[in-house]
Length: 420
Ligand code: EPZ
Image 1 (cartoon, rainbow, N blue to C red):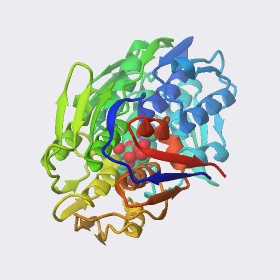
Image 2 (cartoon, rainbow, N blue to C red):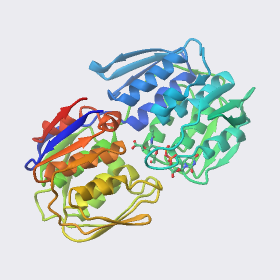
Image 3 (cartoon, rainbow, N blue to C red):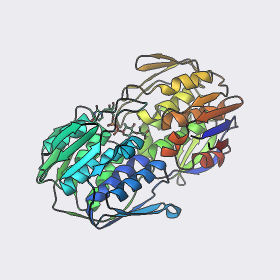
Image 4 (cartoon, rainbow, N blue to C red):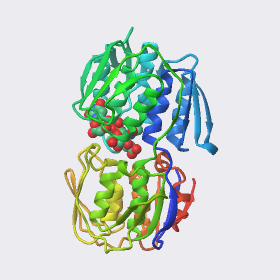
């Protein structure tokens, strides 16, 4: 399934451009099912997950054209011909479940394989289903599938026990065509929610409050096609910020929304990294001060993002002094610890906490990616580890990072790829 060979490199330098956000473009593509007419989406990253979503939409009857030269795709769905999403697609990408809301709102029926768990946790969908039931859907579960049926969805008030990103997105999309007003309380506040809401409003939806914990959606009769440019990927941004820090380098990152990476900036500055927001982009210098450790606790936005946890842990293995990383969002997101320890990190896990001694000279080793962020963290660790680090199962990384090897090598890294 492919591997990266990562050689120890010197401090990274130069410029890198951030691609469009994976976690914004996937729900936006699903939302295009709601439009009568054509949607054109720009700044689309060329990722495996985007390719799977294109195939999924085509299986429902959408005409999808992909033009990655111009980072653009267009989606037009004259008629939805299938309301079922097979397990083959859902098991490859749990974000397939985002079509539940749009399908239900548009056709009155959706039958989708349950996503099941993954390496980082059980990943339940109870909050998605709770919200759709409140909007009037009859939901049955069985044989690994969820079927939702509704003559016409109606508004309602949904309280999310946890500010789930996916549940907020699915319910928000379903509510756009429901009769009446829907209020989602304790909603997720991630920038990807705001980007989706902006896209839906351009299609004619009436959504207010996205980005806060209370979102109000006034149902409309129909929605039309539109054109939209996806926000930059804040996790890819954070990844390259950490790459500059872990190699003690000095890089310029283009196409960044600083507001979206505030917690990552704050924690890197605590470590002694110098970060400057310039007209050309964000300059990140890990070579000004000796880098010291700091503690991390992952939380829903605007807290420190769980998707940055493994990446920051790789950095903390090399900074001066002990630190504690607490993962509160997913129950099993420390799979990368064992792999970092194969490189000499000497990290100990105690429940939801990982204790990192720091100041380690990491040594290259053969390690395995367990999810896309863990894989990226191991590559970053390899940039500073003595010798060569072989990171396998890198299809995980292909899911969420566009041209990862090329972008790193453009900054002076020495990464090569061997495909099976
Ligand atoms: C989205 O996943 C992202 N994926 C994840 O990014 C990200 O880690 C996560 O949000 C948290 O920020 C996409 O946007 C495609 P959640 P999602 O629902 O929506 C619990 C990556 O690396 N929960 O916010 O699945 C759940 O168990 C990926 O790009 C319920 O209990 O995340 C978890 O503990 C990994 N019931 C917590 O909420 C539900 O019905 C957060 O899950 C739904 C979720």
